Length: 562
Image (cartoon, rainbow, N blue to C red; front, side, top):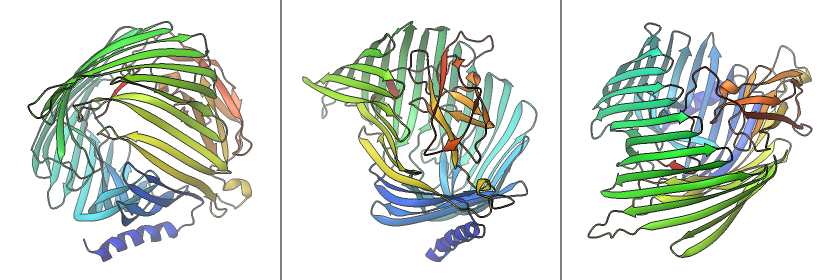
């Protein structure tokens, strides 16, 4: 598409954004070694519209982007760049598919149906979490549609008209809350695609399976899409919890994934069998893995054991062993990793971590921990990942860094680490702030009527041992807030309140069943400079009589990196 047309689309997005006076601006910028990108953006928000403008360098080339959304009589009007979710009900193993498009569109959703329409171009998404940009590719027309046919049956359609067509239709059948089956059929980028899936959950059992048949050059949409994987052929996973303190997981998965942005799809298969046990303060488990990628097979073993001592001390040890298949050109070499971790929880805001690791005859010592205050959140930890696309050494002990510093007022500096599919750790650094505007936030321009996000309620959720609880859900006024990995939560309000506060155990997104021990019934919002922490204490509770999915149960030590 010509440069003039690209500029016209971006200019239209900027003009639509500028036709109304925004009230809250978020300015941010930074750099990322994961995507070799650096740049910045300005986001704007108001009651009925929002958007952003981004500029930066991606792989040494200057790139730009802009988008805006406006609500009009129940419809949402779109202009500029948009990240389009492209999920199918058969995506029971990975529902994070999306692609980038640039143009003009409209969308609407109600209880019976939803649709998304956009005319413009496909685009290559570029950037990081602190700026979004894209380059236009081929002309495209997009029509996504879903509709309830009955209370149990839903029809869906995903249609993309471009130089190569995607026409996928299907049905989703939900007999019970715990049982779902789905079918999808059609073409993707002119390649045949057929998929079926089953997803079943009960109090003790979670089972999901799919079978996918696709053409060798299948893509959901023509063009370069963000790094994401597709499952292929037969895939199955079973999680069984015969008792509250034990879970058994087994599965087989075939993965297609590009190792670099825009690169060819690589295939890998992973088999897994693991068991996890929790007995009071002890936890232990084991896992067996086998994978095949790029013509080589690898066997892996994982053992771990840990214990919480008192309220402040936790120790654990891990053993990893991998044995790649020998070939005439690449001899197999068994790798063993021993590691031990000691973590001291001094209080809900501060903990220290010491990691001792031995592999290949060498011993290393690493340090980390957590610290949280009103201005600083710092977490330095280590995670063990299994990398099927690196068969010669699939186990990797990787740094997990997450930090943010509020310098003054709303100014904030952030840093984070990511593990790439090849096992290398990449980093992102950024800075952001909020700017506020008086005009147009309400029926009058009084000082207290325009301050979106001016006041906040913040705090921490922990258990009776003082350990932060991740994924806890709280209702604060009409808002739903979740805690992060440090147990902290935050909600913003346009006025001071007071607001009611309650714990919502049924909406927790963490493993286990919890109940509230202590909490304030009401809280007041304060400015960022004066806000103090609200403390909420919860504890583990017996499972309720209603069925609850065991899917949240997770291995304490190992993550499979697709």
